[in-house]
Image 1: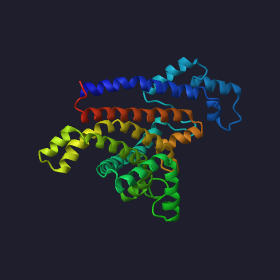
Image 2: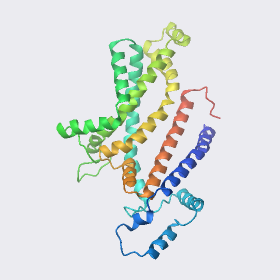
Image 3: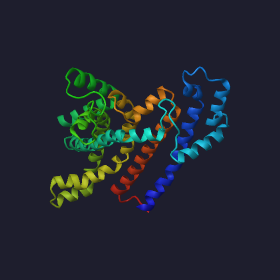
Image 4: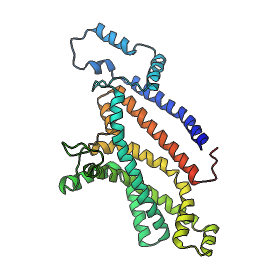
Length: 319
């Protein structure tokens, strides 16, 4: 297993390198001038001072040399200072990543806890009212944009009914991580992001369960006198989950990408919201760091998916 994980980590290096190249080129080739953004409304700066600042930032160097210098600093986790906040970028990223992980991990757990039973139930009640209800929910949840659910949640349950808070992570004046107030603020963004995953998972799992349940080894297990619950959960579900594990890569993409919008809707101070605000303010060091760390989290999530796939399916060689 150790060699399998090491091989996956090595294979992720070209992908991460491609992300770094694209991130660098998109920011460097942007028409906006970083020096102008840094100086802001300081009109007493002479052209000579501007040119010296450009030289100190390495902006007058050829692009390949700029990329090598930037890559060397990235390897050392040095993304420079924010143009807008005038703080070390790595410090700001470190403050926001835990906040985003609270939403993403919670949404993933809820998606699995709700989506898997719904998929199995839809397959076992094939053609019934329950099956049709779950399929309608899946299609609707997949078709309706996540941000629309977020806006409805805020307007109806937050503003009109006042059942849930609609902004930030805690009540003003309260600062806690593991408390009821933080849990109450998490319900909105986690529920909205989970809808996309819950809508996708039952559709795929229903198809896989219906295919596995007709296999010979399932009929053999039943003929041996095993209880139906044991047959479903020990034989059918484990084999049906093998192709479904591949779907988790797409779910994680939904969670990481969806957090950028949902954090804006719920005013949640996470990495997605920080990257969005940095893009609006043209804060290039912060944009670069946000994209790199989001991509790194996504690549690591795909590696975890591959490891889970190897654990679920014994036919995959991990040596």
